[in-house]
Amino acid sequence: MTFQQELSSWFSTSAPVGVQVPAIDSKAPETTLSLHSGEPTVIAFLRHCGCPFAEKTFLNLREVAKSHKDIDFVAVSHSSEDATNTWLRSLPQAGSEPSNLRVVIDEKVEIYGAWGLGSSSYTHVLSPWSMYEVWRLGREQGIWNRPTESGSRWQTSGYFAVDADGVVRWGGAGKRADDIPEFEEAVRAVDAVATAQAKL
Image (cartoon, rainbow, N blue to C red; front, side):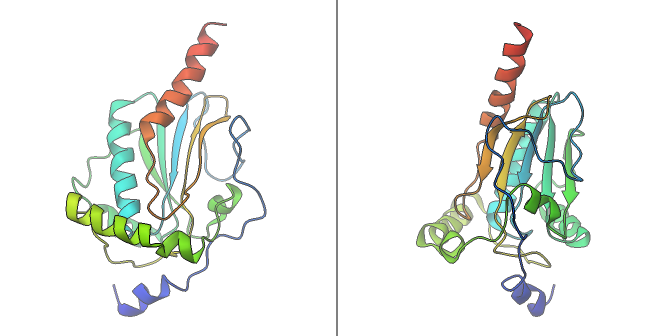
């Protein structure tokens, strides 16, 4: 990782967006992100690899995936494949990902854009609250900034749960850079749909 790579993350462009973030109870966008037919899916669109909030999000996603093997979990990274793999190897308990968790590379941010996730604002990334949360996450959980080899710090994150029929049942765009979702809520959302359908 070079200083130039780190600096470029502040100037890299985010996904161009011409669509809205999918609404709850709407069909999931059709993209190159394949959803396993007949299985509910929980998707996390990460901020850049190296971001402490992206790390905490991925670690949470990994733990929830271990407890719910009947659900497909996907982490989408817009950092390059090499940078993403380097970052994954640097995380605690690297290699412990369950078989129902996969990482998808979207370096051209086409999938992000199709889900309505584009460039964030200055206050989204650098608000006093987000800066405080960086410090708190590091102090309390030992999760600090890691080297950023590629990706944009301005890319908006997002989190969604899609049921077995391809309908969005939970989630939305990250409200701030430090927005870390509760993935058990995503599981409950798709489980509720499956339970209701089973009673019909």
